[in-house]
Image (cartoon, rainbow, N blue to C red; front, side, top):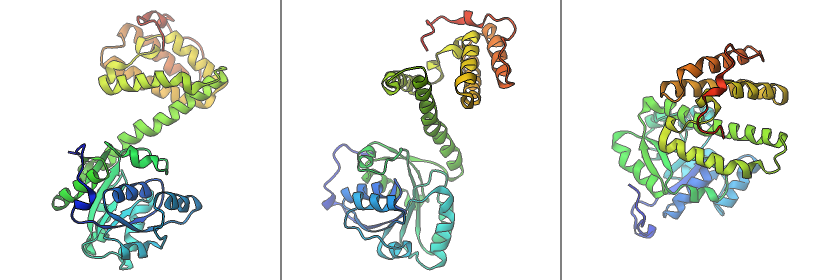
Length: 323
């Protein structure tokens, strides 16, 4: 467990020389956080102008060198490159002899566990997978956001204590993820965080089209409450016309989207169907109102605009229809 009063970094043992391969949004922030814990960033690799700026801002005076040179200088190497680039990077570093026995090699990919580091393991490296469950801006604010952040952590049994110590030193909390569960774990995070951004951006776009001058201000309290309720109560927090079975309202939504934002129709229908299924299975959506609603969703998916049979789905509301 993390403590609220960590010891003075100067009193901690095993201070490490830290290198960063890939100065995207994540690597410099993690290295800066480790520096606050008493470790020493000694080298970073960066290519694009944006990555060079991030390295200069978060790791001033740390030399920018090629990846092989980063490994030559560092005891602890952070491999913070895109998921798809990681396997080839590890293979290349191992094949060129850049990896040293006893060197801690840490990647921050959510998708992979430590198996992706096997080529470096065969060269004597110590493999760790430490994935911070946080979105990054590439600025100094990221260092503060690491406080209390969960890290999806995978490590060999003999390195669990080392992995835990590094996460805690960065201000985070380790959450142990089995190697076989890494893809599912990462899919869950992407489903929530990445799709949330898309949904919010679409909602703001529609509000602007409806004449709302400050959609962010309008949505802030609503979405904050919805997120808090969902985290506290799960499916019991479902509300709105789909959960109530208001087929007429949903049909009107689909018609408006077809006219003003046709590219959003498919996403609306998919999320509405998923919401209906969850509301039904948890007893929130009454079966007698579900038939009309599901008919509207099926008809909308086929490109239709007419009401489904019955046409009385709007009778299901009991919470005022506010959302």
